Image 1 (tube, rainbow, N blue to C red):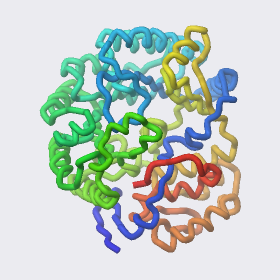
Image 2: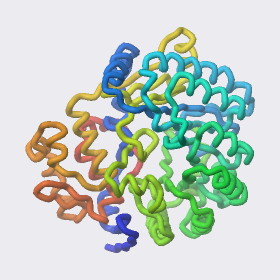
Image 3: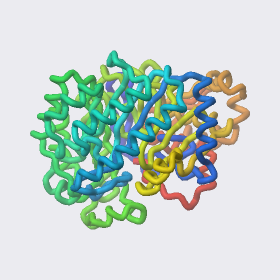
Image 4: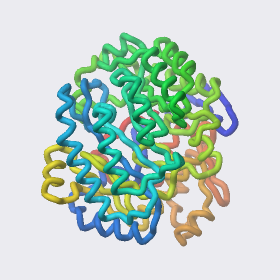
Length: 468
């Protein structure tokens, strides 16, 4: 059994290969609980409208998500809902429906509720022209209470190889203050294999412009496990990334599931790194980023100690939602566009996944909800337990008892029993009044959370990606 230990304040993490080999199963990423496979089509517009009424009565702040599905070219690893077209005229008919949906939803929500968080994802949100971006943001501002003081977390995903540097100023003008760049890998052999291209110079130009324009945070996404990658090839990408000095980093494990995502069939399977090589990559990536001063937030995410994400974790207020980790809790999430998922009061609601179905629903004057899920009291309880463990690596029984009027030890007696082998293996420490995830357990947090997932046992047909 080999283990290595890297530490930066609260970001300590222990890499224990023996434990990883034993516990690195497949499992959910827990951007929601229950997870999306539980959604069903019996949930519709009436259930969503009832949830919005309850949400208005509670008066929580809002988080808005916009899905812009277009890309000029396809990245062969992609598992997102996307439309590949070089014909940019295709965007406007979709935007018109998106704006109509914003108006429809805006009429249902109390106009006074502030929007603490806003995110444009895709696809490639910057696929649309600067004037089209202005149009969408103006419509959003008309129907929702956007903050004008730059205190919200307003972020957008960009493809650095597909964007003109002048757009950075436009994004700042529209109120965006965070950028997320999908870099993935700088190695030219890997880029050719996955059909995604962006050079270090292109990324640097955008990062420099973002800093000049006063963006609060620049985040970068990397993927390990792609064809032709090895720890040796990835080291130079990581050196370049550290030199670029992003505030946050997400380092994702590529999940090769061509049975679900047909575009992945275009990848050369024989060139994929072995499971052993992938584990080595993640170990060295973690070590190198911690040594460079990043904090391990958990679940593939790293941040500078002064970034809001790291501060939120230190202060015990970090959240998790469909976009991953988040600093703004207590918000109802309203999502717009094809396939997007809202989390309002105690429901999840997902829009139609096919653009024709989505646009047809909007044209008929209907909310384009295709399926969803209403959470029971048990779901809400387990959701909170999983969120606390994922965000803070710790769970206080008294807090849960008070919030849900239960006895944690009685309610979760079976789960606590199931955790004992993990405690014996040093993944968790089960105290009299809390559960603490060990430094070695942090990398396996998804496996620990699966203990509290009531649906895992029933879902043998659902295939998830590997934990690490």
